Image (cartoon, rainbow, N blue to C red; front, side, top):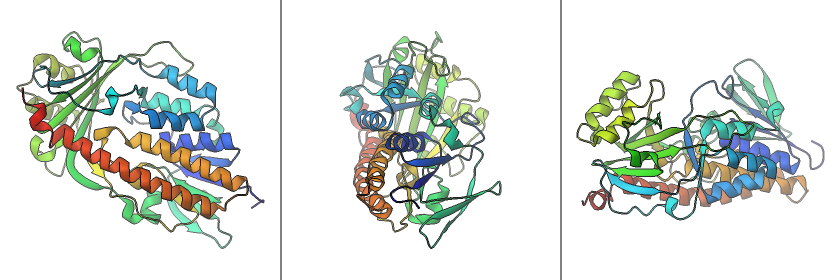
Length: 385
């Protein structure tokens, strides 16, 4: 390795991995990103992401100003309105959520990834499914892919999500446990007249019996150079398995999920139930809610990770993506010290991981509280109508 020069390999081209790549490029650090999917859009990966003040600061730190401006312009309009409702669409008790305090960016997930790919596409390699890692006497890390290729780097970063291959091999205790809750996501036609008008004007949090439904009107403004996205109504329902009468095996087929939605919402307001009817086939997903314990100290040296790979958390407080972005910015900053000769790679990684553990611990605690608010302890207050 040349003095103060090194190469970073990033496994995973999600928002966290691509944000880190942008940050490394801005610092002048060599990198490559390896993604198992065949292309950026080869499979659906969700819809709306809310980027809070911390996530926005991380993106500003990592992106060149013109790219951050492009990302901002690609986000949905801030409609301002945040309302708490019951399942009959009456006003419910106020919900003290961070959304009320300062505006978030509302990004379409695929558009966010497309923006983060700008300027670094030649360093992102698709169709690369990680298999094995190895370490060498010179400190470098080797890694093999399912297609038979092998690469080496001075530092390897797992940004490959909650089912991380990197974490499974190097940080096996980092995996998140099943919380007993499930979340179902979808996107509905925003112009459907059958959907209650008040649900199409901003953000709504609907409280039911041991469950909650979050809806967000995604209206996009001026066209950008990124792929256009039609307006849509994002929705996500979260609650405990027993509330929904579900066992360990979750329904996956559209028909089974729709039948479950029909049963759960049988006595809800017609204009709310219409959201599910306005959701096209192929846009539904039901997933278990997983949550990690507070991240422990690691001893992997030249291997580290960020985001869900180390600290997967419930979507209840919308902190998962923001935590990954903060990790990315923090790691890029620490690695810049190595480039300047002020720290070894091992020292930079250790400092990053110390900061990450503190941040992630706080975010995991906030996520737990958010779950209690949405479908647990706060239910009685929210339903007191």
